[in-house]
Image: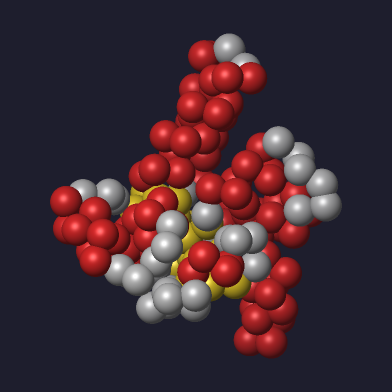
Length: 139
């Protein structure tokens, strides 16, 4: 199962944003145990580094990115992804790019706390709680 995690989910874990970090951490632990293939959009990696480097020194930000890269595959952002995002019916361009990168990477699901911006998605988008419920129903 290939799952792309939105930037907000990763930040919930890294910044221990309560009450969201518990469910997000649990999902990331499933990636760590290879129970699912975790993906991040390339823009998520750069955004996280930028935000972390504002609050941490460069070495700690780089270490955090290294830890993330050990867990996740990266869904590319290239010309085709950008062109498809521009043509999509999404109102938020950043979410459109994330969605298109997921499609091009063959991802089956997206997990985000911001599902309202994914109403035109071509693949299922779940909140962490919804995704965990869906996983439990499959077992």
